[in-house]
Length: 434
Ligand code: SF4
Ligand code: SF4
Image (cartoon, rainbow, N blue to C red; front, side, top):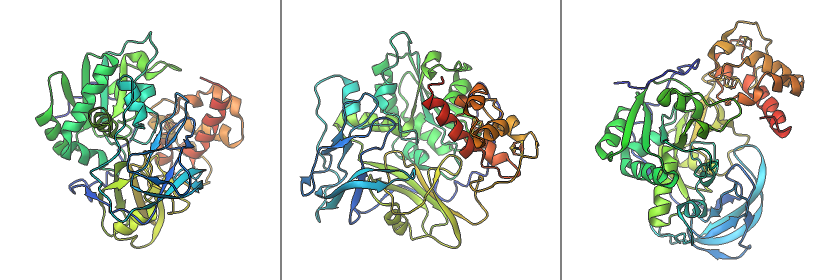
């Protein structure tokens, strides 16, 4: 039964394509021959390595850190020897410094160097390197520290997983519901909220049942309609609380704090066991021989992961990190899985969910403004961004774009709207537009 209160404006319901993996239990990917661990796996300042080439490191050991508040330390996901430190290509197409580890032959993946810090739970979450695992990679400690004048009444856990193809959060909720619920309670206690709501889309009945079987007093499970982008922060707050995040304000201004379910489970592991964020579940699906949900060590190369999934099959047009609506098309498969890599989706020719290379003119059909969940005019924003008219794009609130990709998805002429609008948004942000 769907019990969500309010439906957000716009949005779409693309083919879900989750059936290949949603019923498959998570399996662990073996330790690869080398792991490449980027020093920047989060929004904010990159870490500086604290190890040197030739050092032997143990699983869980700190590899890099930085004193900036908006940052997250990085840890070794295996025991082994540091074989290189230098820039590498990432899933986002940028080059960042990374520590390469040659793993020891013997590995005990149950063991790790636990994080021990003096301080409160927020300090422990930071020291464990926890970031938003839904893809945003915002350091969790920052979200757990809202401005003092904003009282947090409700913690919302996002278990919507509204992107097509992805089922890693679904499997986490089915297989480890108690970790998700425990994480929700920790977050509630840290921010002093009264209410906890775990939101799940209606297309995940097994996850709903599992969570309900493990729910604790004060933790509610809400089932929402299946509609993209239901899991976007502002849309989720509106669906559950009926409140709109004011223009230019933090979501916390509504009294709500949103965390992804995998992030919550990682927070529980960090606080209860001192476990740093060293691995995650990744959905590998689409045109691969063995689609599945895989427990992957951070730093595993996408090429190794795809090989473990049986390799690419057929005529693959592009491989995407993340979901097809918001993910990044990979320029190379020799890029490492990081804390924010929720999926690797191989798209065969003709099934791409959105335009990436299109350059057809706008035919003024009106579909993109109708579907935009933020009430923007994507066709105008894209035109301004394409002509580098940054001020004009800023005046039309390009900053409010949540980069959901709905506009690109609905455009009949396949204009690369999202890519253009991202340029305009980043120009506005660099000018300090709020
Ligand atoms: S303009 Fe931004 S928020 Fe609106 S549909 Fe496009 S990507 Fe989504
Ligand atoms: S959906 Fe595409 S063609 Fe239609 S108005 Fe928007 S940009 Fe133009």
